[in-house]
Image (cartoon, rainbow, N blue to C red):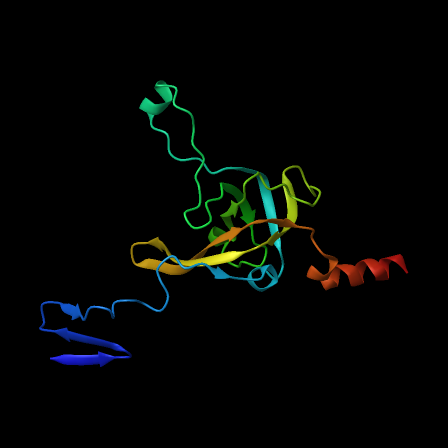
Length: 173
């Protein structure tokens, strides 16, 4: 039995599929990071909860007892240090999916550009965002999700929420 799929010539005998040499490349490799604009991914913005912290590798009890230093994770593609922060998406309807971790790729710790609105809570916008598709969930309740990465923070613009600026102008008048 012989099948031609796109530019790939495959043959199978019921026990497995054999792909002819030179045709085993996929169009998009696993782990591909798609560039995405912040406003497209999060139309209502994000809220940073807590602080940005180093994303450290796991350290076993034996490593701690031996006094080995904690190592910060490095990104495989860029070679930059990884930092983690917990954010909340106010546009997400499902409460369990509204808060998640975002990974920052930077040589030095990214610092938010906005002031806190409550202790430990501040609105943010991100620069240099990428999204990597992944499968999330448990058992038969799986769904498509994304791992978001960013290179840093950008100053939150007033254009991100036009309703807020129009309300404040009406109150001033």
